[in-house]
Amino acid sequence: MLPALILLTGLLYIFIIPAEPHAVKLIFKAIPMLLIIAYAYLQSAPNGKRFQWILLAGLVFSVVGDVTLGNFVVGLSAFLIGHLFYLSGFFGQWRFSFWRLVTIVPIGAYAVYMGYELLDALAKSGDDALKIPVLVYVTAISLMGWSAMMSGNAWAIAGALLFMASDSILAWNKFISDIAGSDVLIMTTYYAAQFCIATCIGYRSRTAPKQKAMIL
Image 1 (cartoon, rainbow, N blue to C red):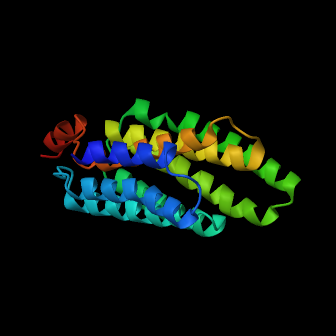
Image 2: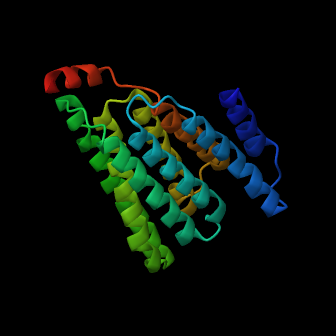
């Protein structure tokens, strides 16, 4: 029932719950994530308990980011820590493939482009204090995306790419120019990303048995 509850509460937050009172809005924003954490905890963890606990830590810091994003730097810092946990977990599942390795090229191009556009927008608006935090965050989420690619875990890859899409829409809308329907786009991709990351705990890459056989 958890996936259905996650979907239901996510849709409830996105389309039904009003912006005010703000405290109620934050509570309903956190409910789908708390259910996703429960879902992640209940996964069978064929890739090891360490992998599960690392991703659970990332999910917890994401909830902290959700409820503190009103203070942008505090929320950004919480999400940054969450991405570092995700990155650590995915790199721990490294499954080398040349084609996965070269995905660093488009991901790197994304990071350079987004970094340039955001730094330019911050310079024009006079928000120079945000330049370093934003640049660090873009670097971290890009590395998180690449680490998911290198894991060979399809759910991890989907989650990382959706997370990158969600944060890109948020950053572009906040600092560069308005995006129509941004709130819906940000939250649908965000909840989908976190659900995929939680699901990846119970999914073993098809390459994993081959790797194990080679080691043996």
